Image 1 (cartoon, rainbow, N blue to C red):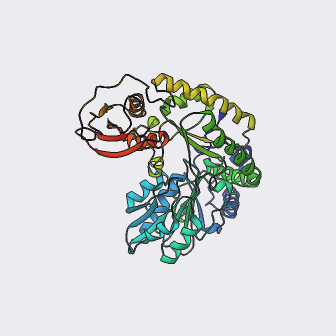
Image 2: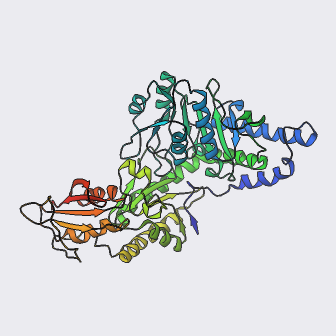
Length: 471
């Protein structure tokens, strides 16, 4: 079995396992107590805090341990907003932040989202322009969790500093590879992303940042994360962070080469695929691609049967049936989305085996869905839905209407593709759909096929998407 989902949770590092077992015997007591066992536990906690601070690039008294990365994000966001409530409640975020950041920001403030380009990156100048008089906090991830694109954190942090706005950085994905540059103000991270045990997060609040901890507090962790912490897990988390940092340079180069291979080979092996995210400014271990005419959940099951564990941002695997907000913000294809994130130690042989399995898995799903060939000819025929009149006809031809209401991704696009060959050049097809993913996937289909996406308009039910045939 090849586990290719380390962006969700990395396998426990061997060093973390050893540290966890050892600290179970030494770190069970309350570090706040003055007896021998308490002092021993306190020494462990202080050592772990100092080592974590060195890895992050901050002072030890600026860093606290939390029960999770999500807890760190929520505590950091809420505390910064409470501390600056006299300024206002404005929160500026990128449109591709992790859902925990977006939820925390919307819970406590008025959110302004800065758009990203098609590679998933914000422009620092646009982010700076969004900082207004009532902005209490800005949030920007160091690297995206779905497509791997790195953000201009150092530049944005400088702009925030000029305007007196603290910047919270979600460093969950990038911290294993190095410290986050720039004069940021707050930072959150999660141990299970770098091979530590789950249930440990980091929150850093720089000296001088106005911060008022939300909710009940006690004397532990500077009042920012109350309660008796899991000290053995904290020790193991920090030990694993130090270990992956020691391996980072070598693993970075090796995994980056494997990901470059995947990025180059997937479009060669699989027809109608879009590799997304920045090809250069990216995390070394992560690559995401989307396959046209593919159900994401079915593809993940096919790969799982072939002993590959991957993830997806496709609406086809979502309980809400809505495409990933990251893919939506980027404006890229969401159908058949696959995220491959390689853990430490992944071999070239595993990657080659994955590349050997992937084309057959995609073809099997497309066959199950009755998808058309990758490049239909002008005279291709299909089981076309009945035509209906509309106002988008060309040359007096009665336009074709595809009723895909009630059909989820990727069926609306498959139905469009099946009938498109029956439409004369210059003619149009109108797709009726109430599937949120269609807003991304129909324009993406047009771009991949070289056809014109005319636009969308409200319909009696759902939305009418209009496509014109150019060739």
